[in-house]
Image 1: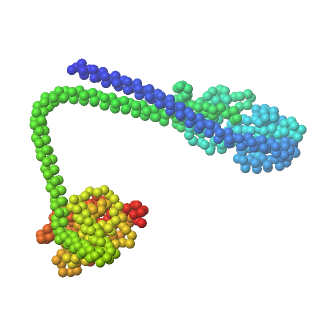
Image 2 (image 1 turned 180 degrees about the vertical axis):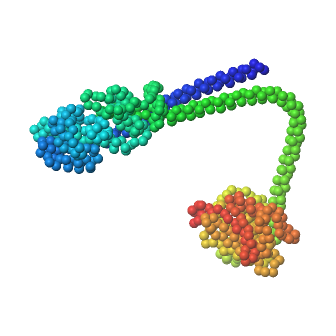
Image 3 (image 1 turned 90 degrees about the vertical axis):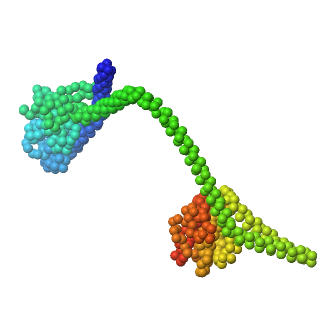
Length: 591
């Protein structure tokens, strides 16, 4: 028991160590991937900030070149221009320049926009480069203006060709820098001395990596005491990324990715510090997710193992109980099978009884119509006999044409009797023919032929006007006759014995793409319209011998056609039954 417990503990410890190692690996690779993405985004931001600075300074560089070609400036260099100061002042106001100077060949100021006095430029690097015929660029903390400046010196060529002087455009760095001060990420621009001259973090300005290198040649770029020690940082190389750990800076990230971009156009280097906290957070989240997944999988595996062991022990205990219960369950199963067999036999008997009741209902309906059917068959038989005797007499007299007419009438009566017998036989046997296109008018006419004698005997007027256009529906002709016969017979039964006029109205019409048949009587109406289609529900008197199956059978037949049958009371009295059937889609049927 103790050995098993020790084994499980060692397995858990080994698993936790493996999870810790995997999480560390995930953190490292996630951190490196995040640094790659951060560097890519940071280089884009640094390039954008550098382009913004160089673009802003380019306006003043182009201004210096354009002013060098101005005739008033050329005249001022030669000592002939009296209105140069006004031109320079107006141009400085319009362009936002701090100052614009015109300098002669010997380095003395000829005119300026500020008019603050004469300054010697003869020994400055930017003036020397202008005298060489090129554009001079320089930056410094100018004592004359008391702030950081950029100087662009453009040569002014004489008419003979040599350089006669220079135009110097002085740019206020504070005005250029104010547009993007405080933006992210931290960006600063350093010169070749390592001094931060421009930055979107004001606390980084004038910080120098080596303050002792503040002098260059004979001209100081920075006034005495301006430079400050650079930020305290520790740089670490992480697979090609330079990550700084910065100390003592409030607005600079404590841990940042350092990027640099040379800018030879303005003789500076753009640098950026990007906060790596989001990258570290992302790496920690990835490592945490990996650890959580491993721990969850390990926990499920451990629980599954423990559950399997517990189930194995429980299985051994259950086997005995199962064996004890098997015999008892076998006996119970035998009893259940016997009960199921009895229920199946009972269900079969019930279905047979229902079928017998349906057939009995049909035969009952035939019995009710037997008197009318006998009259319907007897009347044509008597007429056939009469026409046959007349035809014989006419033949003896040589009147073959008149005899032929009588024989034609005999044929019509025979067809009528055959149709009546065929409908009765189909009704009695309940033939199950497939769905076909049926002429509803022909079905109604056939039913009225069967019920004609009973209607006359009972004094019932049947009103039916066939529509001008045949109404072709989907269904079975014999089964549809059975439905219409049930409705007409029920209507006669409902009106039997009443003193008021007995009338049955039949109508059929096309409504919303379907055919609707209406059967209305003038009887007492329906007592319970919601129950009329229930099996064995009947409101007939005992003497009328009704089983309550006619409407139930009709409901099932109409449902089998995909149609619908409804019954309701008419506002003027009596009951109305509506049979809705699908219209046939064949074009020739409509014709």
